[in-house]
Length: 395
Image (cartoon, rainbow, N blue to C red; front, side, top):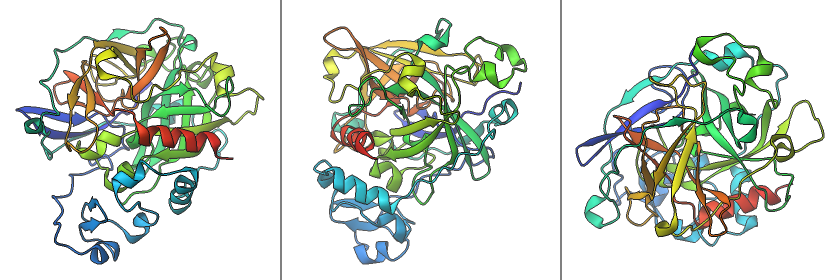
């Protein structure tokens, strides 16, 4: 079986170290990303930006260049205002940025899951805000170790999608649904695993495959039937939410948009077994919002692809206490742990024990160093909690 596609790797310069987006983009040399836009000019009028593609400031939001008018509909007056959004505000925003993902029966098969290829790294762009006291030195590298099989005892799996230019995949996690205890159909992943960011549209054919390659049938390049690759079924995304910051600013390179690089999907089983995803998998993890940084010891989990990995095995890095990485000191610093996992691990969950000892999700993989020495993920606070509350309550 061909190697599973992972990411369009994008680079950013940080204290002499190249950072690469551990994204999961479509096939092709650009990976659907490209280089980040130049810093916007605060002297450009808001009306010019809204009219079709300049840079500017609307309220307290500094916009990148090239924002389509349609993308600005429902934009909060400032990113600070976003923390005060209620369900109705999120619902209004979602109505302006519609996700449409009709089920195509038997679309995903082993060949389609295995025919994607990683793209080349993009040029360096942004520099972390290390002079603002919000970025720490890079942690020591931690070697990833295999997660023991069977994977059916794990809340992890793979996301697959179609995008302009081809197909891609990411890692993801089954999380608890506060509105449907014990019967969650919610999956947590990275924003760039569902949407390319600025100027783009939601990916198509978006599915979650829990316990991917549970038996190891496709390991080592072997051909395997769909029943072995997807032992718990293929779950199509019905609803998706990502942060407005990612949708408006995100792209193929690591920068301030990655500080809000998360997404949540509501999925359904196309076979309609009557059981929820949580019941089918056997569990789901809670999301620990505003987790105290000094009390978090994080373990990142995912399906990395680049050598020495092959995208068919679930790995983990026990990274310990995360350090901080920030491109914008006004936004919550990302969590960073030492880890040698490569592209394909994007969107994979970061787990930490809560005070009661139960494991919870505290982040997801967003970017990593070019040399595969560390991974970084968003710090999940008010905006992420609001997004989860919205999709949990959405009919």
